[in-house]
Amino acid sequence: MTLDPDLETMRGLGHRAVDLAVEHLASLREKRVFTPPDAARLHALVDEPLPRKGHGAEDSLERFFRDLLPHATLVNHPRFFAYIPGPGSFFGALGEWLAASTNPFTGTFIGGAVHAQIETQTLHWLRDAVGLPDTFEGMVTSGGSMANLCGLGAAIHGRCRARATVYASIEGHHSLTKAAAILGLTPGHVRLIPSDDQLRMDVRALRAAVAADRAAGLEAVAVLATGGTTSSGSVDPLPEIADFCEAEGLWLHVDCAYGAAMALLPEGRDLLQGWERADSITMDPHKWFYAPFECGCVLTRHVKRLEAAFDADGAYMQDVPHDAVNFYRRGPELTRGGRAMKLWMLLRSAGTDAIASAVRADVEHCHLAHELLRADPRIAIVTPPRMSMFSFAPKAGEETGRQLVARLQQDGHTMLSSTRLHGRFAIRFCVVNHRTTAADIRESVQRVLDTLAAVLPART
Ligand SMILES: Cc1ncc(COP(=O)(O)O)c(C=O)c1O
Image 1: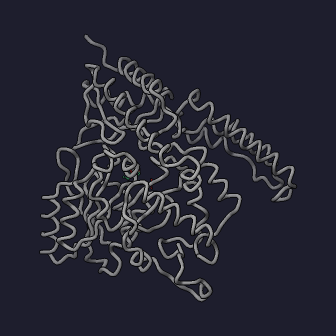
Image 2: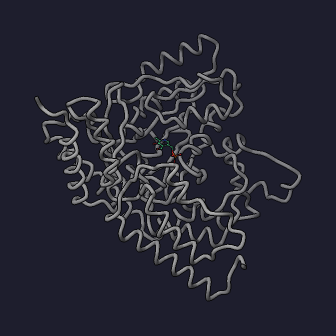
Image 3: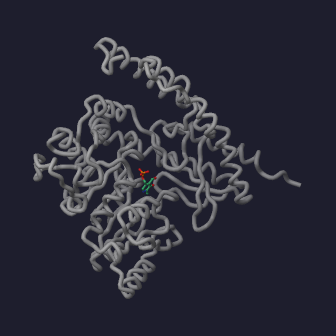
């Protein structure tokens, strides 16, 4: 078996792969969005002897699409409203193919100058599309977690790890705390600042925490604010936090992994106002910019500091031109592929106006779902629509809410997930999918209400 078959076979296999993928995308709406995964059953399904001789690519394609994929959770399904959906897109998938088939090495300029330039250009487009100043430069990362790690790495560069202390809201994403641990901060030196009644960082509590830490001899280094929290879409008071950071000499990192795409809309620009003053920003094009997974990015106004934070050397690197863009110096990885290609292809093919229209539709669909659920007397709204998510709970209480989520997931028609907000159980409804229609929303809400009726304790 050859690893690159003859040209005709390659073309045939490529066409078959595209046909199967297109069939899958075309029938997403008819499929189950979720099947509760059973590890033993999946093991039995996937388990095969080591393929020493190989089954051939045609057989492998069929095996994947016919036997395995039907059991998968479809986070790109038009009725997946749990967590933060990853819709992907066909243009993005084509970009992934460009990267996979040309296999660039984008760790160094010598290995991947063309793709590095494409990556830089793509980030400039993204930056311009959301209205950030042209002082922001950065890197495409595997996702928001890695982007937060890079931003925090730049923030604490040169600081004493044992004394450095950073501040995030209690509603901040767990990747911030994880990044701090990986970067060697003392456990507990990510202060989780309480949030106000709208789930935004309480700036008075932030000021008090910084003052207390300084008085105790610690070094306050950075505030890790969020523009669109995972649980409720809340935006920390960025102008006030930026003022505070400026006055106190603190690095401001703003995690906009979910929220950045809102800045494609005028009202989203207003909502995120102040983020342009950040020292570093996380965005996640694989969420609300509809790029396929493994496409986040970090942008910073201090790219030299980012490069200082992650610089590394070795005799084998001596031919690398050090005055060029070498992405291995902007994050932990050396070998990296054409991660930006899916975003380049998507932005260049569809245009940012089309992406903004899809974001607009998601926001409208979120409002529609909110209106429909709010009208039902058995439902309480926990948080109003913010960006493209809101949350609700059955008035009957948490146990009913839990049963509702579990029953919906068993049912496989509509996928929702739950969280806690100020300690209170809430079911999130997050719309991030250009395939979702108003009819999907109406059907899903009806399914939620019907399922609620089924799980409500029988009246005596
Ligand atoms: C606000 C926020 N930050 C960071 C992340 C982590 O991003 P990723 O899952 O791409 O690593 C998420 C993920 O949902 C998020 O919502």
